[in-house]
Image (cartoon, rainbow, N blue to C red; front, side):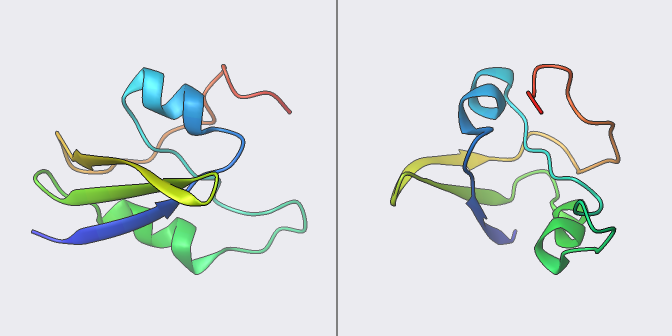
Length: 77
């Protein structure tokens, strides 16, 4: 079991309601962020602390292993 700290901003509500976490692969300049890459290391049973609006707003247990996915349609640009 691993522990993860996830700082969420604009997408917290959508991710919480959808029961998932998501991060882009690259930023607008085409750069990869280490903390986005490591999301693929999340495994079933891992503990996830979600930080939003300057507080830990939820603690969750991963229901499955991480996998690659496209940007969710509910995210606004």
